[in-house]
Image 1: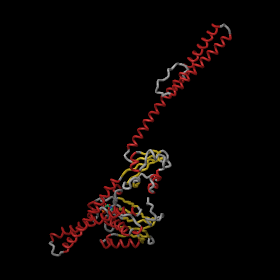
Image 2: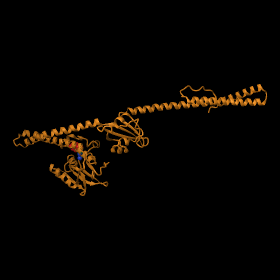
Image 3: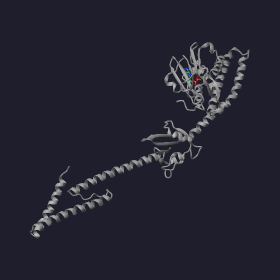
Length: 442
Ligand code: ADP
């Protein structure tokens, strides 16, 4: 601590007292006049300090950016100096904070997606202009209003309580033709920031792509049926020269592959365009259902003799499902096990029930297996590991995509375990009734 101001203050007081005493004694040489002089000196000193404090208060009440007070060397001057420096620092950090807050506000306001800041009770604290356009939230009027009272869609209110990194889709409360993808992130202890993106253009592109595929497949089906019919007719003609037999056989095979491809494309677009309805569900005994599938497979190819089958089915297991779609799931998975395994290998097919009352259909083979980097892509349209082999065995690259779609429509999930060179197990887990127990299987 600097003691110099105290020293100066002491000198100042001493000079004042001695000055007054000397004056007092000069006027009247007595003890009383000396005492009066001391009292006067002290009063003058107190008045000086009072005046300085008065000026200090006046100065503090003004903006600190004004010139600092003239600084002396006493204690009060030092005190004023310290207050001045402190106030200046405060002012500086306040200004910096103001600039940062303004910058953050400008950045959030410039985000092209609707952005809303909510407190822990879901009351609106702030919203940008796109939030007004997409969600109808007004940054002037709606501050402090609970967001659920403005956006009353049940799905929105339910999803808001879950923090889901993938986000969810809702139609805009401003214009229901606009589809919004909503993402919510939590920050600073239960506060939330909500982003709304307009994904209608993306959905429109997807819709026209799906319509194009559906229409093109539909238009191709009839001429292809005619071409196949003629080719089969030519193939059966005994007078066909030997030189043409091989090309005609190849043409029949390729036309068959194209028909399967078109059938799968039409099935996929049908799955995408209709939702699962209670009236389409049937109560299916899986053991009987599997028997029918196996018969179809065995008549189609020389499957029965070519593989060693292990069938393990819970006879009491019944599930609600769309029967045609369940046919597709079972047929595709068993057919794949046959396509991608060597003759005489074991294929195990099972239906069982889990502790959580979910049905599990599983097909395990001892085939070529799949390396890990491919597994996450299986289920994407036309994703094949070896497209040459897939085509040779009559594959379209759409089978697993169809399976995945159907399983997800039934609120189930598909799992794949595989080791290269050792074989694969494809399992689907389904709820016993997808519309009653419509919790997604996580
Ligand atoms: P594809 O009609 O080509 O069989 P899928 O969608 O059914 O189309 O399967 C996609 C790809 O997954 C296949 O091309 C194949 O490479 C791989 N695959 C599917 N099932 C198996 C299996 N059981 N064993 C090894 N690979 C498989």
